[in-house]
Image 1: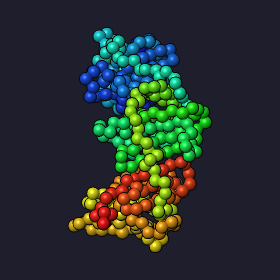
Image 2: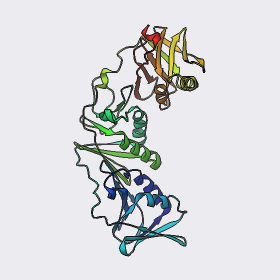
Image 3: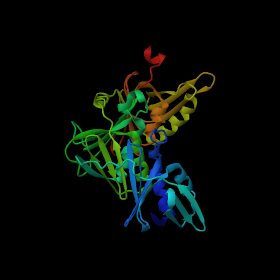
Length: 377
């Protein structure tokens, strides 16, 4: 095997693939990156048995072949290469000679015979979606998923295809960790039929990184009974699906609210960030109180101090409401909403709060309240 390629393209490819490599597995071979050469260029891939990825990179191929290279070592070298061209040559006893300018590395490689092949998802259902839309949908939901091993089914994002009851969208992403829920819908041409599947959050995080780094125009999503794949221009990512029953999220969405507040997204974000300084010493609890056409964001911590942030708002319905929340749950949502104004819907002291953009995409975010002594009283 012998080839040469541009260092920038190699660095980009290796950095994406290396993130998939497992360092905790009892199977040492999956700690490597597979290099395969053909007339069209080189293909590098990784497979941690839960998720796999392959990337095609343009290269001048002199001799075809395959080899495994330790991922950590390779990424450490490639990430620090100077701009220009780098060449790889497989020598005797599995030694890979890596040459650039007047310098070279010799790395011990392994034969690729026992490396697990990347599965190709048998197409059951598929659709294409613009990269920018998929990026926004993931950003606005993935943070609400759980990372607890006890709630494995919540360690992913539910993706629904098809029209649901009362839905204006035909593609939806929903995530929850039991304390909050984020739901984002979109109308996407070419989404036909109905299906629902749970994609691990880690896989979607890689999809998000790829879209952001590669400025992807379109992404093809292919679904089978137990796997999902995402095909970009020169990148293919495949992941196992999470098997299990996702909670009926529709039952969590409040049917009505006693008080609806229209407020500037940025003003509420900045107020909540300031209140969080005090709340950090009081279990991150803030109180959101509506009264007299104003929204008060309050926090109090013994031996630290208190804060009362006041924002002018427009209210509908009951002009008085008071609910306590974990400020982090509120900040997470406000940081991913791009609309200039939002509706904040509040009910009784122990009712969940709902946030949604005043104008813009189909998005709702629900945060569960904190039970305080005042609420109980």
